[in-house]
Amino acid sequence: MGHVIIKDLCKDYVERRAAPRTANNHSAVDRGQQLRVLDQVDLEFHDGELVCILGPSGCGKTTLIRIIAGFEEKTSGTLLIDGKQVKGPSSENIFVFQHNGLLPWMTVWENAGLGVRKMGNEAEKAERIQEYIDIVNLSGFEHHYPHQLSGGMQRRAELARALVVNPEVLFMDEPFAGLDYLTRVKMREEIINMHEYFRKTIIFITHDIEEALTMGDRVVVFTERPAKVKLNVSLEYPHPRDFSCSVDLEQLRRTVYEELGVHHAL
Ligand SMILES: Nc1ncnc2c1ncn2[C@@H]1O[C@H](COP(=O)(O)OP(=O)(O)OP(=O)(O)O)[C@@H](O)[C@H]1O
Ligand SMILES: [Mg+2]
Image (tube, rainbow, N blue to C red; front, side, top):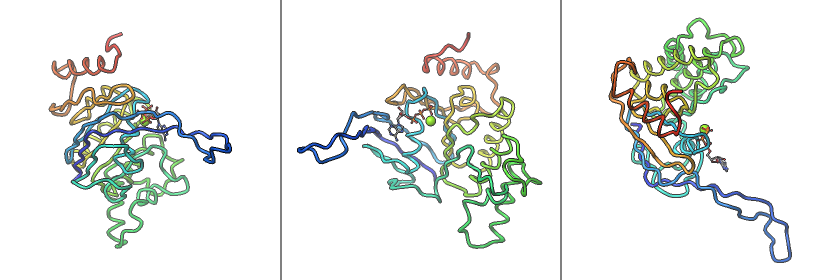
């Protein structure tokens, strides 16, 4: 489960602005200019795949995630998750990981259990919450509040919350934004290990080319807005990945830099 098919997907935002009411125009809203954000996007995310998405700022990456997660409507095209049309957000199948998502008045334990509050059996629930707190290395911090944790620990608590839900598709939109470099590298490793263990579909948006090429089973590069798929490459390199030991990977890194219109060597 967790197979996403996107065909010919387009998204237009229509700028709405207030228009003066006149004798002939009783509508207070005038339809303004259309902004095409996604243009005939064709993609397939396979079950259990970790797909990293790169693209210039403002090209439409978050919009794409919001559409797949059912928070936003597409303008046209096909979108299927496990063969079914997406008609709205589904908390069981999909989880959107966002940073700064912890509730400050709740402990790590309570935050981690937020997504399974309605789950029946208390003992089973507690076992599951503890399992994921252990997996993200926060054992001993169950009763700490978010402000008592470091930035990296907060991200790990957020990750535990996502994993407790056990979603078929996990969306991560720049989850490491704001973390220092070393913590970020550690978090990458944790996601790779966690993904190897759980094998859920993860759609991971990042601006960091090395991060995408180190972590992904596949990397997708979008054009400037309106976003079209510019590059869609399978990364069949075993972990740990070392750019200096793989000519192909190093070449791919150069290609991705070029596709994004920046120089890899300065
Ligand atoms: N609700 C909205 N109404 C109108 N326009 C929107 C809306 N949401 C996003 N947009 C526009 O869609 C475009 C793409 O936005 P989006 O947030 O998807 O970009 P992004 O690729 O995630 O950028 P970044 O890398 O900076 O996060 C932007 O031009 C933005 O102004
Ligand atoms: Mg974004």
